Image 1 (cartoon, rainbow, N blue to C red):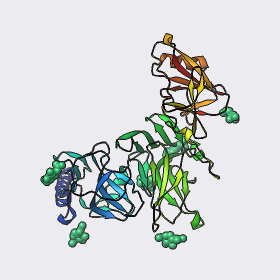
Image 2: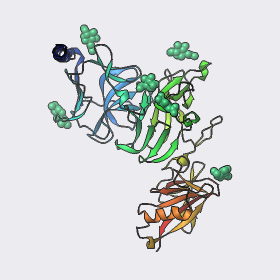
Image 3: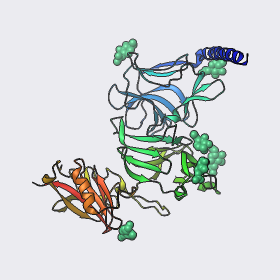
Image 4: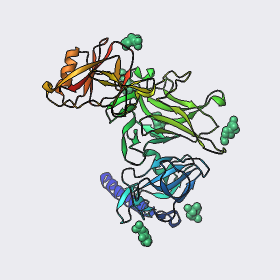
Length: 442
Ligand SMILES: *[C@@H]1O[C@H](CO)[C@@H](O)[C@H](O)[C@H]1NC(C)=O
Ligand SMILES: *[C@@H]1O[C@H](CO)[C@@H](O)[C@H](O)[C@H]1NC(C)=O
Ligand SMILES: *[C@@H]1O[C@H](CO)[C@@H](O)[C@H](O)[C@H]1NC(C)=O
Ligand SMILES: *[C@@H]1O[C@H](CO)[C@@H](O)[C@H](O)[C@H]1NC(C)=O
Ligand SMILES: *[C@@H]1O[C@H](CO)[C@@H](O)[C@H](O)[C@H]1NC(C)=O
Ligand SMILES: *[C@@H]1O[C@H](CO)[C@@H](O)[C@H](O)[C@H]1NC(C)=O
């Protein structure tokens, strides 16, 4: 009897549930259908595109279709207001890498799905929120684009799908959420680039091509074995004195209740503004910009640069531009943020954009190594390498590996780094750090 009634009640519950869901349609006045057509906007926007603003606007955020190559539009959220001399940045994008054409449509359907479709009707991007109780759409004042249910919960939010930009109060999570920012390929080409900023259980890290780490945070708290990062949020952190409030990427920890939150400090708040954004740039650098309301001229001000030309006083974790993989292009020696040399088998020559290592080929009999003393690969500083091992062992790993362009070796701790891309080498003035670069025997 008990089993019978529980079956009946679960069937009833099922129908009740279906009924609820089919009832939850978006009120007609909340649905919309915008077409990518008509006049272009005239104010300066990032990447100097042509663009068409569409109506949804919440100060200072507006949705637009923009393109940097004809007829290849991205639907994106722009931050800023019309003002002379201000270039307004794109802080969220729906369809990077999947552009739409003239007459594409952006619609909130009555079933609650938010859909970007090309002119021929093909769906290019959607929120997959049909029949999930959506009753309305909004751009919130912090720049989060949301679909809400009747209780005000977010069925979908743009904060869960960042591209290369994080806004204040936006979070990257280690698991089950957005866990990285990915750079843009170039100003004209809006596809994923080679750099990513990733939240991991033990660190915040920057990668070149997904697996070559060129920077990571140093949080001593996390060296305790059972403490890990859950997520990291861009915050405006308060301090005792209001003038000392600062921007930070604040990490929440698991089992970390007895510790302070590890923070990546991103510069003091100026202009009393919390309209700021953190950007993983096309060049792989991390920068924080802040918005100055009520000024003439450019409203965006650069507050923080992770890899900086100038060494700032009081910054403990200073990194110069030499740590950027592409600072000296395909190959080059870097010192104090400048490209200072092009290493060749017979010496170091003046650097130019053409500086490159010759392809060594696969056969061990066809190449040899030349040595550089006192240099690091961009992966050396923030990774442990492999080993300890003898230098000959490190060399033989590289020799056997066709894709290896050279190897890096430290005689003080006998660690070995295999390099598949050479890119920027940093002069470290440390006689225990060596590079061995493959070169064809001609
Ligand atoms: C739609 O109508 C409801 C009820 O009149 C109103 O509360 C709501 O603000 C309207 N929505 C829009 C987007 O105008
Ligand atoms: C867009 O649609 C309008 C109206 O249907 C049409 O006149 C126009 O030619 C279309 N534009 C393009 C580029 O297809
Ligand atoms: C680590 O944390 C987990 C989750 O709180 C706990 O169950 C476990 O006992 C901890 N392990 C150690 C070695 O402290
Ligand atoms: C981040 O982690 C904290 C601690 O577990 C949690 O309370 C918070 O909801 C998380 N934030 C997001 C946006 O997931
Ligand atoms: C900063 O802005 C907030 C909110 O706009 C305001 O309440 C506060 O008084 C301002 N502080 C200063 C020092 O101007
Ligand atoms: C060279 O590296 C060793 C080991 O990391 C370190 O102890 C030493 O201080 C470094 N010397 C210089 C000049 O940087």
